[in-house]
Amino acid sequence: MTRVLVPVRYPLSEHSRRTLSEAIRIAEERDADLTILHVNLYHRGSETTRTDLKRTVEKAFGRLMNARYVVRNGFLVEETILEEVAATRADVVVIGRKQMGRWRRAIRRLVDDPNIETFLSEKIDCELITVG
Image (cartoon, rainbow, N blue to C red; front, side, top):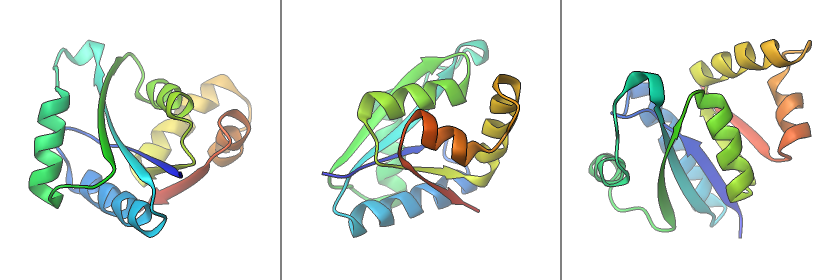
């Protein structure tokens, strides 16, 4: 079965809602499992729980079939997302355009070529969909 991963902010921003809406559409269209991920950053000190995330998403979108809610702790959002992509063996990652910019900056620090699509395809071998 196809696996779709979508990282979101909590509480859901308008941008996260659009990104999540597109991920839901893609998961339904492809009859895929959907993983909704939020990353608690250590330096921010806030602790969102899986239950918080699930309640908020279901309030906004209703009950989602084949959805899994995941909250991870990390120092860097991008690194934690990449770890989750690898752990879930995601086939599709849906991210917002703002998140793409952060990934580019992070990758630029790691490699000379900040082409995130190339970097991700080499590192995780999945389809990357960016929502504006």
